Length: 166
Figure 1 (spheres, rainbow, N blue to C red):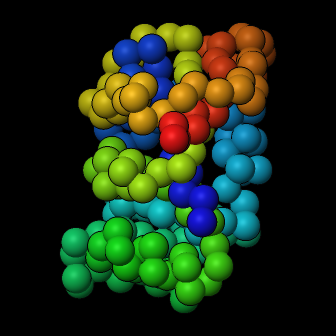
Figure 2 (figure 1 turned 90 degrees about the vertical axis):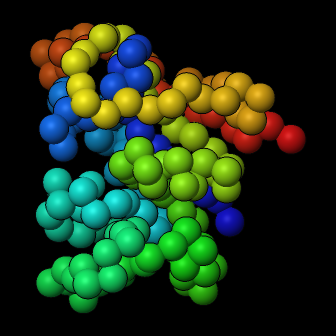
């Protein structure tokens, strides 16, 4: 099973501010959609609340410690541990795409096979940051997308694929 973590961060590793991403990068969203379609997306409760609806063409799973948490969607699953998510993905024959927040990324990092990181060429203010990627665990691989500033993108970025080292 592939377990991919996918996120966008600035040069100072900001991934969010007050529950939202402080940028709008359509080609990053396009890559995210392509990369996570037909997989099981895993998100924390706050990430779910910021989105508010299931992402199409994916099995949506919310990872939360809140045993009373429910959602009004039959096609969204609730899990209470990493092990429960992995078991569910195995039973459904799905690869996992972990999409935030920081605590969910940290929980899955030891199991991750791949990281897809949008590296935004800007330092922005935010209240949520990722830890540095452990270069002893992951090898920087191919650049999947290179985007310059244009009328739709306020910031240049690269989407980089990191692979778990052997």
